Length: 112
Length: 112
Image (cartoon, rainbow over the protein chains, first blue to last red):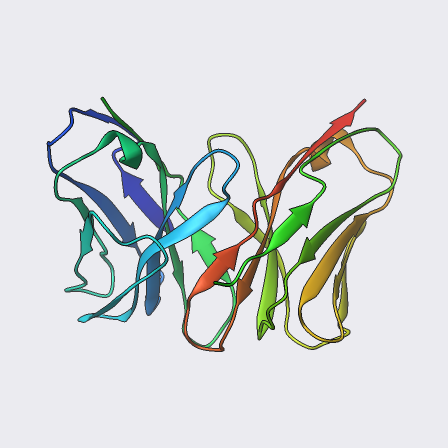
């Protein structure tokens, strides 16, 4: 039981490049979400999903795309990286009927 | 826009001292959670409170949800160096929406 896994752990991109941050969970959780954490700003919700095929925008969705084709996976796509997207990204999951939310270890992204 | 304000932002205390961290908002939340995050890791859920006035205890940690469900506090008794970390509160405005708003965090350092 690995919980929530994220890859890669670190990534450096040049402005304009695209990439996908991977997130997977093996707990059969319906709910999954992506957050970014910047210094002094806590965590901000980017996108979330309440089930396979269902996604919605959070607080800061611009510049990011998501899809949820399976219960286990919830990838986050950066379409054209910008320096403002330099941050630590966390994926989280939760069963729909409980409050316990589990976070992955994070991906530290630097855009130069 | 819903906001959760935490205070203090930083706290450095001696082992054995007591402390309280506050999480305040002008908005009502259906549930409120407290997390602890250590450097390089994702947040770990400590507790969820859902009823106005609710008090929950986790060993030396006491959590309270305000009667109006707009604020919460975390009290640590006899702090230990192992309590060092970033404490985050997070609120879910409407039950089942899975849209969490996070506070900006309180960074606690307990000196031996």
